Picture (spheres, rainbow, N blue to C red):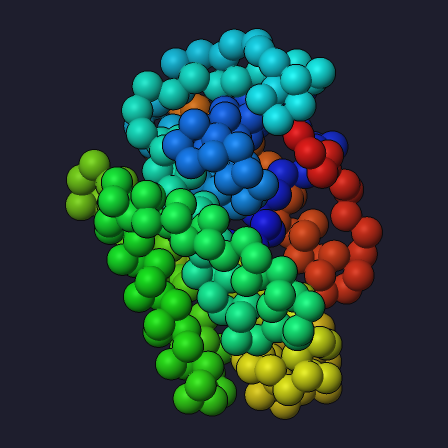
Length: 287
């Protein structure tokens, strides 16, 4: 995951924004508890989205409380309490995903970035092993996704669908595990697939100019069109429309207003920023 699954703060109710911050801070706290103080640095909006979805599906949120920020003791925070493993599962997904992203960076990055990756990789390697012991299915799905992604990219596929499929399939499989019955499992699989496809393709769109110069794999480089921005935008819009259609079929009660905000405002705003350079309505960098 790459930090694209954001809210649009200006369109949220105050109580919804406070609830979102409480989940974000609650997940941050859990990452420190499960792994280490430094593991909190890998906290992302994407894994906050995942934690919030898990909590909503399971009705796991049991209330909110005030406390001092563990990362910045001078700051007071609200924390959303969770009665199940939603936070721990999202924390594990975060450190596992970052570990495999670091492995990918070692292959594709320039010297100084590779040097930085080598310095922090041992920490994430240790946390990844710990997370895999507790959630082996998550580890397996992310590892399979990275292997499939390498095969697609090294094979030089010219298909957007083939390039985006490993990431989309991984998130589909991860979310499908949360289904309480066959119908909900199918809906979550479709929702996860479309969100995962959108994440991969918007990341590719974000890297388009750099990859064009460096010659790195990018599925959009294989498309012949006179208006690349419109083509990319239409492709991403299809993903968001299908994701929202699937989301509407879920029996979501907790945080539903926040999810609607993200799918209807936050994700499109990020998309417009990446493709057209339109200025986003900025959220706090550190919630």
